[in-house]
Image 1 (tube, rainbow, N blue to C red):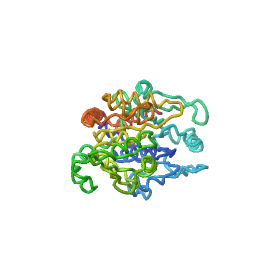
Image 2 (cartoon, rainbow, N blue to C red; image 1 turned 120 degrees about the vertical axis):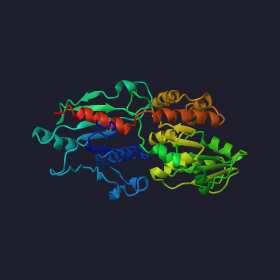
Image 3 (cartoon, one colour; image 1 turned 30 degrees about the horizontal axis):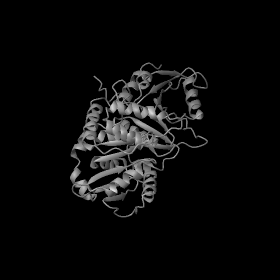
Image 4 (cartoon, helix red, strand yellow; image 1 turned 135 degrees about the horizontal axis):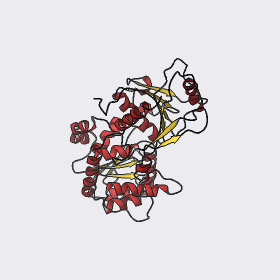
Length: 377
């Protein structure tokens, strides 16, 4: 019988636009890697692939078998007629596949050279209740050269009624083999110190947190990720009149370079508290099983408030963690509550166990695609 984790190999076209902060590309690269590990071939179309140089060294040089990174140019340059047609199209996070690409495939379908692809609209991650209701629903294409074809909504999620989350089959084994004590020694974390990672936008409560750590009796080693988080941390240190390059009281910052995805995983495993943002780092922090605080992507209409509440409800977060999230995300103007790390760790560990008991996104997605391919004539 076929293995549900490894349906028949297919050729996938994944389309990714880098809006900001590299999170979309991070998710698309993880998905590409996991499909390739299952024997599928992937063409990853990206409008700005530069972040792959540090996120996945060697990716742009074709170092990983079965994955080809292709430029999404303006105007778009379709593949030559000799190129094979993909079995699956993925529109990642609301991007639209170039009309030239669709028209080229429609011509082949009309000539009976190839069938229509299984066309997936890969949505953003949310714990809101509508995700379970909408996951897997069809969306008929009514206009253009692909009129009569069908797109399918695919929703990642935290429950068995959704499309699941991205994680590698060997992730638990790699994490179990990780020498946390050796990593902390190598990173200069003193015995008894708090190690925290910071990956955020510009949280309004950041100066308050840094001031608290600066005055604490317990040493804190703060690993600050490159980019917006580093800019926000330097600004926060100026706000509290703290130098950014040296020890400030008991707070010692470590200014990190851009990290490959594997090194970022180890950072999350090695720290006692992880501040994350967006989607990709949230999932990796959940799978790390350590206490975490999520800086959700802010939306002008305030829609992120309900999304954060839904996530905290799924997480079964204790009151102190809920209050910390509201202050960290600027939803409440109250002081940051105390870090109740033991309770937060218990919550994170339980969440990790629930997630690992569910089938991962790549496995579910390939199974979903296989069922749709069987119905396409």
